Image (cartoon, rainbow, N blue to C red):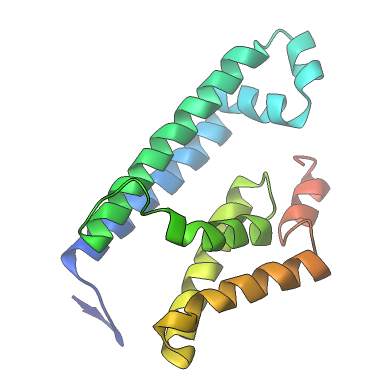
Length: 165
């Protein structure tokens, strides 16, 4: 399928759709459910959440369950993308994942999504300019620049202004 100058395969469209569904589901969970409110409360101040009647351990377990499900879905999408699956296939993307999390702001869900989008586009553009073997260097450069210039990430200031960080 061609969209402007870009072309997508069927599997890329499926991966994109699954990613969008998970992003919307994560937003809906954190924003519109009691469990999401509890997750945000425990993340912000565990002791205050506990004194408000929230079972912090149960919410922590729920957060681990959700993150495990999302990690499994990410592995399936990666397997669809590369057409082979092994238990070490995520190791090659570790630097990019860390760069995306630090760029968006560690602990910021929306920042991580934005950071992943920025790093993904940067990697694709740098693969064109530098060649595929040198593309991960751009993610490492972004990681170093963010740690030097704004270690709290690009959305950490907005999160503090809204009182969610």
